[in-house]
Length: 124
Image (cartoon, rainbow, N blue to C red):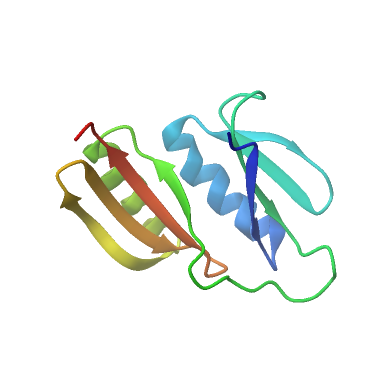
């Protein structure tokens, strides 16, 4: 259902270094890229996360209420992504917790302030 989702970056090289390192924990890698946009995923046919500088040349800004969620594969995977993001310079936006019987998640803001969730969902 989802082809890709895009988040903005002011400093594309800095953000790509962050996501290159972070997404390798979930076998994600940069699949393709142009001068102002880079696409990350696990395979060319699956959903992707794109990082780009704004097409209009204006400053990047974060949308209030917008967030990208990355599956951790397990509670340990969520913890690893959360901790790695903090090591890479992200800021805490909510430590991992079992919020509901079927939902374990933690949150950070990346180097540009975009909110990223790391989640593990189990059948209710």
